[in-house]
Structures are given as C-alpha cells and as structure tokens.
Length: 163
Image (cartoon, rainbow, N blue to C red; front, side):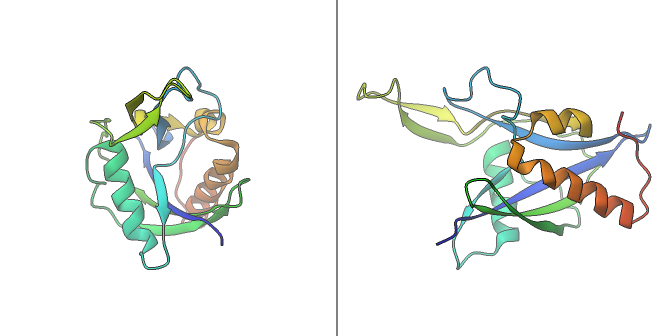
C-alpha cells in the first residue's frame, strides 16, 4: 500500500518582489548539524479516511506551534518521493511574518541500543527561504514542489524575483 502524506507550502512575495517559502528543519539527533537537503515542507502521513487538506493544516500546527494563517489554499500537486511516498502539497500566500514557536515531541531510543528513551522536537527550526536557498535546503525529493510553485505563480501572472 502506498504511504500518503500531506503538507503545506506557504509563500510570500515581499515588498521588493522577493519570493520566499516557509520550510521546517527536522529535530532529533539524526538531523542535528545537517543543513543541505535536510529541510522540508511541514507535512505528515494520513490514512484513507482523512482529508489531506485537513492533515496539512494539522501537521503545520503540530510542527510549527501555531495554526497556519487563514489564507486561501489550493492543491499545488501530488509529488512522488524517492521512498515511493506520495505527498499532496497545498499552497497559499501569506503576508504574516511567521516564526517557529514550538513543535510536538517524539520519543526515540538514544543513543541507539542504550535502552534510554529521550524526547526530541519533531521540528527544531523553521524559517523563510528564497527559492535559490530553498532549492539547496529542501530534501531532493521535494525540490519539484518549488518548480510547481513557480509554474503556478507564472500561470497566475504573479510577478516575483528569485534573488
């Protein structure tokens, strides 16, 4: 059975026309100190009985510590990841200056095989990135999402700059 996930890619175009996207950095010891290809769209898995849009909003709040801004959202697309997982990504424009508040926690045996369970934040950082920076930061499997955003904005005739 295919694993499905839903996420929310918020973007903003600042006063100078710079296009930026909001990304999160995973917490926990495996991701500590990793930056290139480590960041992600806030997202989480869902089952057949769940609405992907609702899941994207829930996961955003769990990972960022505050509800997503109340803006119109559209389905940007469904993106197959190298693992085979399918991620449904919703997008919306906001002028809100977002800042990470907190994240939900998860349990992990750390160090491995120690028998000691520790708690770690699911997300340890979140921030706005320009598209060239985001292309460097995002997991390689999620980079096509940025191409989808640019195509959508171009279709809408939105003017923006990348740097």
